[in-house]
Structure formats: C-alpha cells, structure tokens
Length: 350
Length: 122
Image (cartoon, rainbow over all chains, first blue to last red; front, side, top):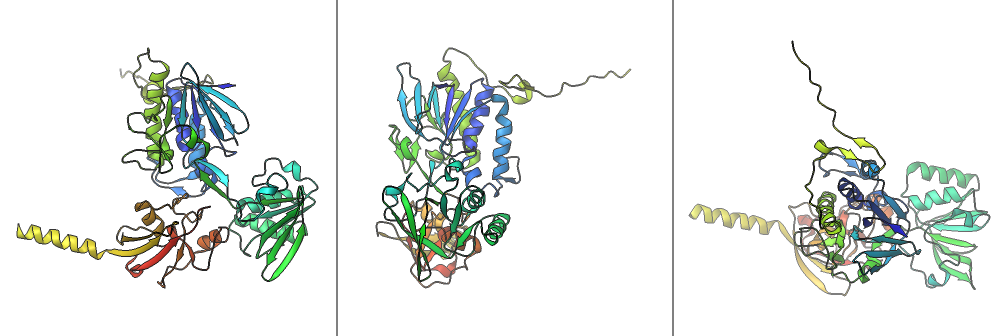
C-alpha cells in the first residue's frame, strides 16, 4: 500500500504544481496517471506547441513546461503510479481514502486531489465489427511490452508519430512489420517518416497505403486481416494488430465515485478551496466546474495553491499556519536539499 | 442625451452587423439556429462550445485531435484545408467527403447561412 498526504489523480500541469504547493506545507504527494509519462495533454498531445499565457513565460513549449514543473517539484520527491487508471475509491472510518487502480495498486491518503483534466486518455478504437472479440487476443491499442512481439507478425495502423515510431522500433523485434495508413502522407515527425521509408526500402517494413483494415479473422486468436486498398482486397496473415489512432479523454470511473458531475466535469460549489461534495476530495484544473470557470493552466495553478492550504487544515486541524513566501523562507526539499536567496553582503565603508 | 442614444443604437447596429446565422445539427438530429460573431476571431468548434453543444475540442483548436469533426451541408466557400487538418482527418473515424475540423474554420461574413452537422463521438 502506497501511503501519502495528498493523492493526486492526474499528472498534468495542475497535478504536478500541486506537489510544489503541498511541499511548501511539508505535505508529501503521490500521483496516479493513466498515461505512461507525466505531463497530461501537454506531453501527450501537443509537447511541441508553444503556450503564450503562462505568467512570466512569454512563450514556452508545452513539453518544456512539463520538464520545468518536474524540475520545480523534484525537491519534494513525489511518487508516481504511471500507466494505471484510478478505478475505485473507498472512504475509511477515519475519513481517509484508499484508491485502487485498474492494475490493483492501492494508495492510502487523507486527502485526494482530482486533477484529471478532461479525463483519462483511452485509445480511439477503429470501427471494426468484431474488434472486441480479439482484444488482448491479438489486438492491442497500447504497446506495453515490446518483447511480446518478438518473432511475431505485426500489423500497425495509423499515420501519426506513435504508428511510425512503433513500426520503426518493432522492425528489429518482430518477424514481419506491416504499416497501414489511409493516406500516402504521414502526420508524424519528418525524420520518423524518412526512417520508415528507409526501412521500407530495406524490406524491413511492409508499407500498405492508401489502405484500411476492414475485417479481422480468427477463431480464438487473431489470425488474419482484410486490407482494402482502392478496389483491391488483400488478406494478410498476422499474429497482432495494433491500431494507433490516438487517444481520447474519458472521465471514466471517477464519474461513479459519488461526486456531483455537471457537463462531464466535477462540480465544486465554491472557489474557496475547490472541495467536492465529498469532504476530503478536491477537484482542481480542467476537471472541475464552478460559476466563472476557465479551463486554463494558470487557473489550475491557482486552484492547486488554494486547495493545498485547505488540505493542510484538514490534515492538521489543530495546527496554526501562516503562508510563507519562498523569497523569504526558501525551499526545504524532502531530499535534504535547500534552496534559498543569497544572504546580503554587508560591507563597511571606512 | 440624444447623442448618447444615437451612439448606443449605432453600436448595437454594428454588433448586429457583425453577427451571422449558422444552422448546427447536433448528434440527436436537433437543429440549432445560432448567431455567430464575426469580430471575435472565433472558429466553428468554439462557436459550438459557446452554445454548449457537445463538441469536445480536446486539443483546444490545434487540429490535433479531430474531436470537433463536422459535416458541412451547405455550399459555402470555406478556407482551404491545411496539411495538418487533412492528415488529422485521415486518422479520424466517420469521415465523409464533407468532413472538416470545426476548429480550422474561422467565422467570417462569407459563412452567413452556413449549415453544419456535428459528427459522431469516438
């Protein structure tokens, strides 16, 4: 069981900054995220896009913002459960919570902060009739363990970076890699496209474009696919089919936690501390809604800051505390590091 | 007083002038007649959100998610598709010949009377 002071669900910018504000109050944080890396949308969807409305940064790439936040929270040594989705929550007799992920990892904390953005990212599934039947029986949407494709025949579909990058990677692992895309053009990074072209010439990637997988065949396990290219139908024997058509956010199991939901967001009736209808559970950032709500990263930072003050009072009701300025108090990391302003040098003029 | 009234009326007149009418069919087939401002730099994805129609706009309008896919039913002159939009649609589902990404179409006076339909959710 992982124990922490504030359990943060969602490792996007708001979730990450919560670690910093909690750290100033000497509260330890642990984050759960369905994606395999921190950063949420900023890292998954638009890492190379510039953001212009982060105070103090006239321009910052979304991916760089995430890197900076990770650097900023490093002294407070946050824990991460990545690639797992928060599934259930149980309130304990003492008012604390146990949150369990889809893989069974349990987390215990007195305070839960949901910073889930638009929800957890789920793969977008192609519209194929018997797709469900072959899920985990030859059809995978996310590559968790590349070794399972060793010496197997693999078909990848998609035209973005994931489809290109995994085709390149698996070309050295699988016995046969086929990449299928509806167009001849790809949306991914130029060097990835060039690499796929090179591997195609070397006969290490079988490229079928413009084409689409239209049928899946097999008994208990996937055995073959039908691929349509213009008017031609091709039957392709394969062990695995990996459709990589991006991810789409879904509120998911959090929607069944007994929280008040309004228009796919968690209702927080106050802008005092962003606590939900369940005491001890807060909702911050894009996942919440209240009158006047704006889905902006900078608003998420503000909400995280107020939420941490309230969480502190909830965890330590008897303690008195006054907010401190980092310029004055510096930062005492949980890892023993200390950052502080340089002391003024006093020099006497004789 | 009269000058004030005139100014108010004139400003009001201008604001009406800068609005256009757009018909949006939602996923249940309900048609919404909406007024769209042409002076706010808004696009069709944002217009749908402004009227609380069920368009996600996950990526915020960067042509990177296709959650604002629409079908254009009227014959209006639309901005040409960029490579980004074209390739994103190549990976989207339920795509038809009249598919566009709402976030890539800015609202201008040339779109008066535009008729669009929100594509199914994926």
